[in-house]
Length: 503
Image 1: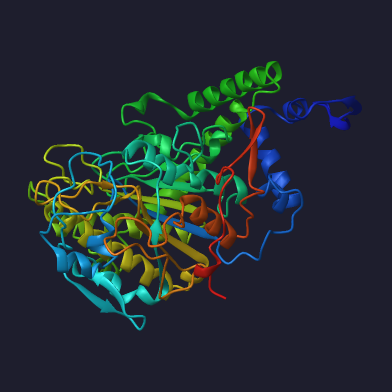
Image 2 (image 1 turned 90 degrees about the horizontal axis):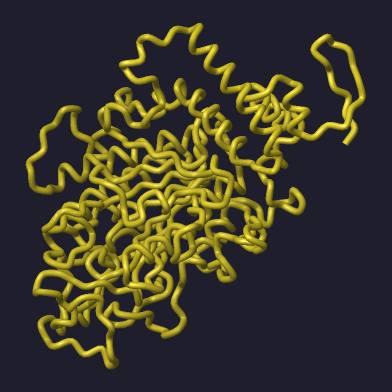
């Protein structure tokens, strides 16, 4: 390509230049890439934000701009929270008979077990909810429940990956990475995709659930630990770095810029350096923007109370309890709202990662009431507060709230008080952003064991396709060529669930 290049002495010449050489002549390193990004945004913002499109026309008129995903790691029990089964109440304690051979994950084929908590109707739609998630009752008229979700595995690691990335094997980008890649950022000073892990630890697979894999690495999820003194690791210089002066810092940056330029010219087909530079540039901008976004101290008391957030420094007992779960989950939900209203595209909130024994997470093999109780009370308080808060700020209409877990739990008992894994059917729900509220789609059978209509369950690909559709993206067009294959979030599957979309 022939370009007119300004030399250092301001004279002009015609030269054949690659893109990287052109950037190098403009200064090299961090500054040049930042300049290139600004120029690209200035001249054609849409094309810069939608790199996958054949043209710039949206696949469908977008109904939403952003997504918050609430992920209950460990497998929350649909039949104890959202999917009421009168037959289980009637048959409680009787020997379970599934009418077929069941491959249980452990030994959870004991007698039928009724829901641990009573159910009551809520909202104008009369949706039946368990009393442990009663806080969501104020929101059910805005929610669409999908009760016939089916998985491919009863193993936490593979099932979690499937829900998070669309694939059961590692090495594929998370859903938030695809949305970051497809839509770009609304705020260049904050990440496009933010992950709020559980305060106790990571879910199965850890960062693989939100890693960009073969997509450019700047689309990976940025981890934020809400409530910690240092919520984002390595964002600011370490306290022991007092010996660094402005002059030495500037010299170090110049040296890095020179090394980056040298590496880029020697490896013109390797995009990893450019992605890393973009990540560091974002980190520099976040030093100013992130603290303000994550600081909830200025929120009014009625908002903090709505989310169930307790005063800073509250001491919690050693055992898991509802007040602590409300505080931790509510704090993440409030931070999520603050990030969404500042232009973050995708926020992922995780709940229930405690690998100690006895378990204190959603994986309730031993005692479902003991484990699910505090977690569900905390989740319902935080999620309902988030929905109501978004609604009162006018943000719910273009924000999708997406609740999921990796699979459900069996309608039979395990050890008397627990439930085993059930990948054959479970529940998701959606809210806001063009979703038809007050409906239940795709019933499960009388036991909550499989979809009522066998072989007609809803798969994660369908939910992903629907969310992309609401964002104005055709899930078949959002692709990235990797190892000779045009990969996409929905693989070779997926149908938009028009029944859950508001007309």
